[in-house]
Amino acid sequence: MSHPHTLASPEDGLRASLSRMPEDARLRADVPPGEPGWVRCDDLLGEPARLVRWRERLTGWLTETYPEAPAIPERTPASWILSWYLHVPALAGAMLLHHERRVPSLAPSALAFRIGADRPHPDSVAVLGDGFHCLPTDPGSAHQRAVVVPDERALATVLRGRFVAHASRFIDVYGPLTRLGRRQLWAAATDALDNALWSAGRLGGTPEAEGAGVADAALVLEARFPPLTSASKLTLTSGADGRREWTRNREGCCYNYLLPAESECGGCPRVR
Image 1 (cartoon, rainbow, N blue to C red):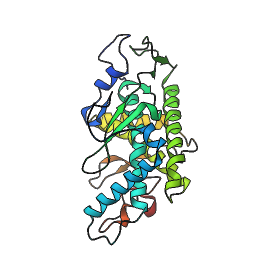
Image 2 (cartoon, rainbow, N blue to C red):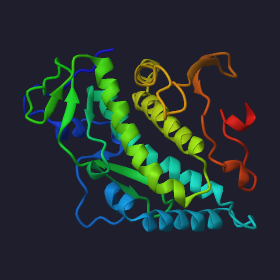
Image 3 (cartoon, rainbow, N blue to C red):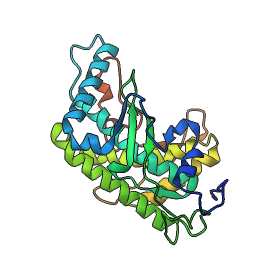
């Protein structure tokens, strides 16, 4: 599938790419001055107590949402924060790969996100760097911050490596703050990347766009690349109405089923 650029110029840098993202992606090129709720990833990882406070805030939100629960099981907010955080670098990388065939820096210093005022999840993401890897055919390949790679497989390798590097740093910081094992931590990272690539396609709103996202997931996760725990898990199945639809078995559990009146998610490893 081709990924046409609407601008063709050596000045077509990462900011221009971000301006072309679907609105639903909630990706931007800066942190709005004075807007509350924004955190920089490197600040969060440099001060683990902030991750603990974020998890405590989520526990409070879950306590209000499920007043019938005698207590919120520790594993549930621990797992949600794990998935929510890893979604940030996964989304930034997946959206720019899918829509622009570009890979930005995914380093903690190059990413920020806004924690929602009500439900305390990342509701917007900022990609703060302006360098990117791209293909030789990219109209912005002459940009001073562009690094050209030979083909899509090389681009996928850059994305996977950058995501794994960020996930590694996060897991090293967050792991000791939880009782989740390393396999669970890396399962969540694998889920975040596979899901983000799929979601980037689904945002296109057509079966063809979704299929292109699935193809991107197969490109980036064509095999198991440790410490990630699996290749892409996207498969075609027959839905209840007999139509074929894409589905995905999760690698990790979010422990949603521990909350009152909730059950395991579709594709949960507990019920397979």
